[in-house]
Length: 282
Image 1 (cartoon, rainbow, N blue to C red):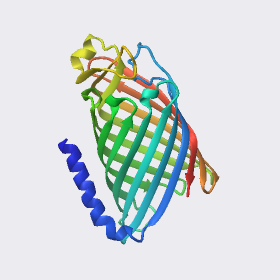
Image 2: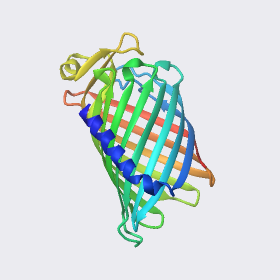
Image 3: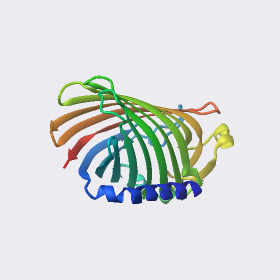
Image 4: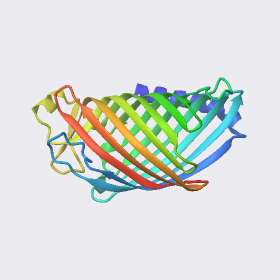
């Protein structure tokens, strides 16, 4: 609770300080619609029963940017999302959040990096009562142009989520690196890797080792007869994203993501996700 309060207080102070600058800011609005697939929706351990799922995802975002001084700018990002599942309607979700960012580019040379710091808060409301979650997050990040077609990104982040059930309380620290390649005028490819240390939640019938190491166990209210249990793990996330601009305002985007979590008690949890859809800029 203290972590969430500090995050909300810090973000509030940042937004109050930013208000005079945001009055004459540049505003960009985005909308997206896509189809999500998951080959292991319950994050079952290797060797366990894997359940697949598809979902429709809808999102709206607004990005407000304002220059403060030479090389210094502020950005306010607000977003709402909805996800509607085909088979497991208890996972249907509404999410909303806001992030305040401070950006610094200390020079105008081509290879001068962009440095950033952000604080954010959010909420995730599910058809499943147990999963309803409040979130606080913080991030340090850098963006670096390598050539006229290649750029690199890196980030260190921390996320805290508190839910209605201790089994769905999560927190983690992460480090991420990514490479963006502008293949041609309309086509862009991105490769990303993230290392995450922190809580993982699995739904199933926990074995003896999992029970001994679980932070919390709770009968689930979506998957009848199964339990939700959380534990510490080291997670590796790799993704490939292709974006193709159909018009200046409409982009077709496809992403393939692989997630693998390793635990101290010898279990491994793997899943593949895909996302394909359109992003509209207006």
